[in-house]
Length: 147
Image (cartoon, rainbow, N blue to C red; front, side, top):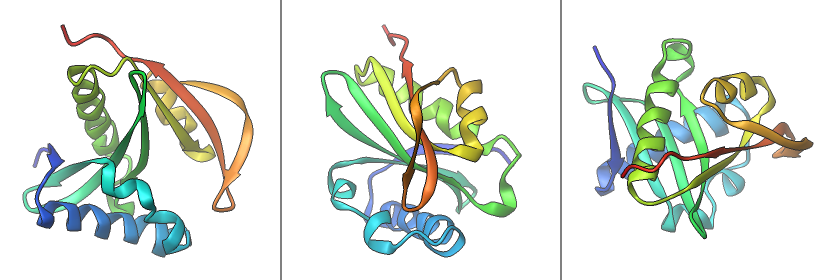
């Protein structure tokens, strides 16, 4: 079955995003709920990757102004990692951002997945730092114009 990617716009789709994030970040990684679900959720774009009706991948994007989008909360169900679902969702997200006029994407990558983002042409910036007691690196990518 192939991955169907979309911008989550309905209350039901947004609930699916929150639930998948809860499973990955709160249950699996032990991130406190108050950190995982923050004030940026209300104004963010939420992307959802579905196989049939099953949510398997999510990502969130916050507009930081001046053409910069901050991608975060990228998650794939543990049992489905390594199948290309995260790459497929990220390709959809990056294309969507370029179509919306964003010129640059940044993110904070957990250390074990820096290589995943490097394959998507993100470059690391600066030193390792910690968020929710998890080591991260800042990463950035210029976006190709959709026009």
